[in-house]
Every structure is written in C-alpha cells, then in structure tokens.
Image (cartoon, rainbow, N blue to C red; front, side, top):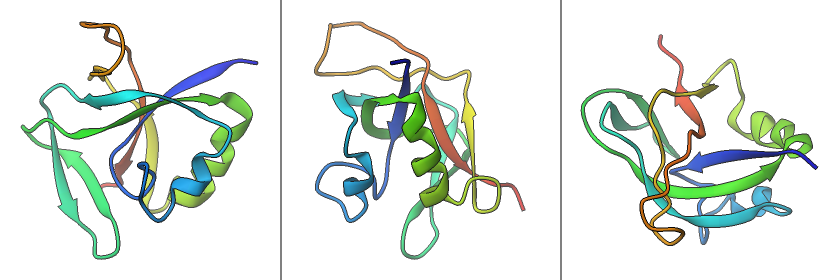
Length: 110
C-alpha cells in the first residue's frame, strides 16, 4: 500500500486529543522543519503560517487511503490546506541525517 510522509505539530501528535485519528499510521520519529514557518494560536489548536522559525513535531508514514481522514479533521480547504512544502522534515529518532519531504497542514491565508 502506498504511504505518504506526514508532519504533525498539534493535536495529532502522540498523547494529544486527536491522535486517535492517526490509528493505522506508523510513527517515524520526532522532527523539525526547515526555517520558514511561524506557529500561531487559533484557540483550541495551533496553526502554521509562513515565517522564519522552525516548527517541532512528529513524522508519520500514513497509508494513502487514510489521508482523507486527516483532511476531514483538518477541514482541508477551509481552515487548513494540505500541501507539500519546500521545507523538509528531519526525523530525529530515525536514521541520523535522514531528510524527507512531508505533507503539512498549513493555516489558510485569510
């Protein structure tokens, strides 16, 4: 089954309220993005927009058919937009120095 690499930074992380949505995925490690983002407070959850900072999060291998489940939770297209970013995620607990391009949910521009 094809897999997507997904970077999560908020309520989808292990131990957080929406992590149950990640059932059927594989945790690859903790990670950080390249510089170019800023995390903002949207009340009940965080958002990420363009900026200058790195964002810490977790990296998962997600079977392609499960991506729709993540899109529904993230309200893809309305609140968030899923995109492959030119940034990279570095799984800290996996192969040292490994870099992979990840899907990331970014907060929609208003």
